[in-house]
Image (cartoon, rainbow, N blue to C red; front, side, top):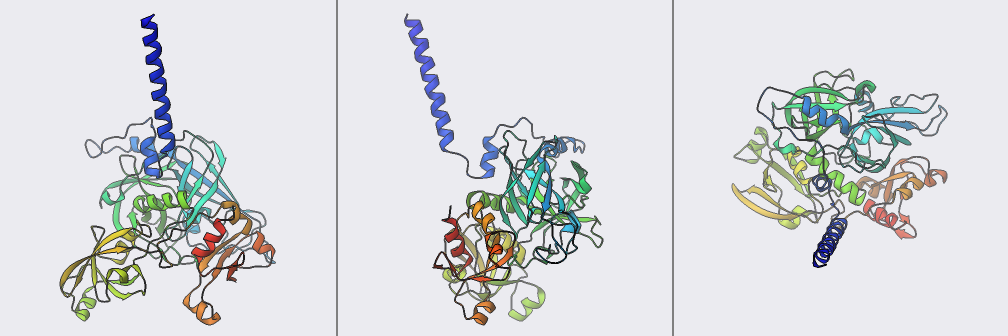
Length: 470
């Protein structure tokens, strides 16, 4: 009898322990995709890197199940009017957006691209230009299963987007560390060029920190693009956009985004958004529905020999502060015009793109140490970063149904707009598609000063008002 009682007691304790563990994990759901990846049990082994003969088979086997084919459909347009597709500089490279440019098709326009599964519950990273303005998004897995996807959020400034399908237990790619990527390192590009699914190509990292001025080159909605591309010579073509750049361990180190080409087809070099930028953007889009962009509040330029001679700068390193914004984060920390910033958050910065990339990893309200040179002496300042409106507030998530019903995207007014129209603030409609606003005759370019009888002076205020309209 005692033995039975002991068994019952042990079973009860085990049951309560299991229930307690379940509740513990249930309450502490990982908030970032990196934590989600670490919390998930995966059925593959990451191979060791560097030793033995060069072999891409294991890395390819890891990556191909997690790279998806994205097919987009756009509403029919007419030659007489209505919505017309805007020219997209990426579309000829990778097939994202409307493949027709400003030409008018007789039926629905279709586009094609790639995406990477980053969590086993269906979150997928891709390029913004792959899904921008799409009315329908279809995701086809490597095993040919097909799903309808919804957009969680987009960031034109990095050309990244987060979409989701309703499925569980999916294969996904684990994040690598793009800071550790070295020039000359072997990498693989995985995607769907020319609708050829699950295509793998190999190359090496040709350069890091490339700025090719392509993001926003034809998109007025992009105000502050961040370009810090990994450049490779792995072959990519139309349809690869949004696909994976992986190292030989099978880790995701970048999102293939653009190519350097005079023809629209691969001509030797491709460019990928580093995964360390994508990490932060994806977490922001999942948590807030919008990227929490932090600003230092300075106008900067690279230090070169001519600038150094003109300004009496002794060392050719860092970035030169041309101006400091009033009420910005830098001004509050004591940064002055003429300073040379050489380090941000412990990382050396020698170009504008390097500085922007480091700041892009942070959110408004983050305290970031900045090392600068002033009067030939180094100074360390702690800068509390601000948002575009020079506050520390986060932008709330706007419910997707609200955005879909309105059918519009907003942008802050420029100083020229404010001065010319004698306005203190408001938001400009940067793009519009079928929805409540268009039905009421509102077009792109219109300016809104009041929502629900509340004055809105900025995009942030407009989004916060709309975020309460669940």
